[in-house]
Image (cartoon, rainbow, N blue to C red):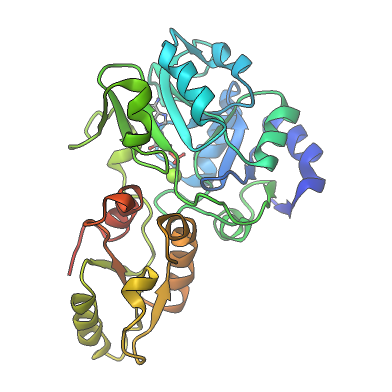
Length: 329
Ligand code: AMP
Ligand code: MG
């Protein structure tokens, strides 16, 4: 299959593909999504196939307007409307009870559905013009780094889907916060740019999910995510990162790199290869996946700063822990 890639000029064609039951990749403010008509089971099956996604990992259903809520969910609690008014369109996914019209493949057989209103011009145009809720996971091959540019989607999806809408770099850069509103206490199943402390004023109590995932609240949590192709380990301290780098560099087959925020890499010896994620937490989140995609091509051993001691970096560190398989040197 030939994969077309382009911007706004392709929007009508993209919407037509969605209506016809095809798959289109599109930008969102979090990461790029791989979308299909959420009501069309055959179309949704094509997403699982293109990604190689396990059938028990449900998709998030993307909406254009609040009017669509009652078509995809039922028994919606009052708090959902409050959070939607305050935080959306934006990087927040709400888990609600599923409407029977949503085919079970979309939610991997769960009786709940994740919904989100993305805040990206092309995503909103696509949702509005295709006139249907769009089920979309991240547009990477399953288990790989999430894509935050059209080029990254192209690397993973070329020849597998008919179209990629390219809207440049995703601004937020890590996947949405997933909040379960189907049972109390309301629980964050996946941390993202909208934190527990931002949600607390509207919910009284909200928990960050901790613990092992078996038959999961958020089934996706049991899979390894966000992993670079090469070895990737974490380091909390600069000295430890340098020591490990030197040890690794002794073997001439290794091409190591240290990746961290500006502060972490700024005074490192000049003969050490480094990549900066940026300064603020927002910058670091936004550049994270793209920096790892760049690094895994140029290097074969990544030493990645672990921000476990910095509460502001909680959500980004969740991705870092996964990329490094929880290894700290
Ligand atoms: P992705 O779009 O690839 O970032 O994956 C979507 C995430 O949302 C995965 O971690 C899913 O497990 C989670 N998710 C989607 N729908 C549900 C649901 N109904 N209940 C719990 N988690 C969900
Ligand atoms: Mg994903």
